[in-house]
Image (tube, rainbow, N blue to C red):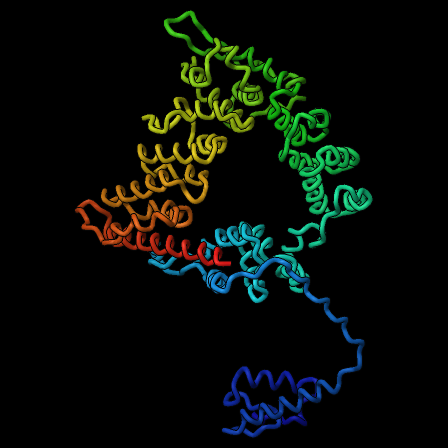
Length: 539
């Protein structure tokens, strides 16, 4: 086979031949115009240089591209130097690839990034320009990071996003592609954006107006309501959850007649969250006919007579007539009536009893689960802490919380109606009595950093599980939460847990080493979090 020379290769094909030779190596593919041997690599580079000049010389003159606009200034103060170095480390971390479920003792830095961003945003720092690409890449891969990451990245991130298609999500997250929303008093611009803007821009505009001018936001929404698509009406209506007020009732009542079932259901849900609304009164009247106290026996008992039909009035008020698979019609209708009735109506109906006394009453004919579940939904919807406490019950109750059939998911939602301190105390009591096997979802409802009592309860329960020889990987989720949520001041209390314990005969093989490793990682992470906070405070 003869080696092609530069004269044998068409001008348009020389570059491709050179690239092929470079990729394969000159010992396997001699480049055109070069002799094989030790001088071939140098000859390849010389030929490539000549070809590059020839290719450039062959370009036709064209109009130069417009110069880029300068990136906007970020007026916020810069990060302290130590905090900037820490951010670079956090962004450079990647999840470990070790198998067997073991993570080693090194902290998971990417899991600390959301906490770091929240602290940096709280102090109003600007992102170092050189970190913006990595910050946008991190936010691209994790949607949960996006709000805090884009807030920290500031206006320069939007400038970059216009230049890189991979970062276009930042433009979608910013109304108007980063343009500022008009002020409420600028009625012409508000009207123009509402009528001509993209859907995301209109949602953001409505939310912004809602926070500053609730009346104006309602009037704006009402002005185009009849011409909006059903899915858009649903999203606009959902934005009224924030700052829901009695003045919203007339608009929501009109939405009860909407042609979309989902819109009607959402309007009914919002109205039922207003205990003084006409819909709440109608639902209360229906629900009260279904629930009563029977005093004929040796002890009072709640009796339930579920609805026998779902009439047109119930449907208009948001009751969905067809139950999901596996649910009976009557119990389905009953639950919707009870969850939409104001909780304040029940004491008068049930003998003047308090919520605790009502929840403690037995319920006839196996209706307790359905009735208590509906009361749970009502307490969450109406943000009623008194009923939430009654339904939660004592955290030390033998039935693991709640005097009735209150599920773990319902308990977590009920906890959300309590203030942060009370929430932490309840979960701490629950863990002290029942351990950690069901506590993960409840811990997710607690404020960060955990209150001292809650942190001690978690650490004590982990220590008990370790001493009992429990399977260690069962607690990896709680251990991960502790790394992110335990108060860093608790690190000193954990030094005694770092040694590898003696393993009992019935312990999981290797469990002692895993526990020691996990506690070492926990202590290291807590001290790292303390250092991160100190670096941000130095600014």
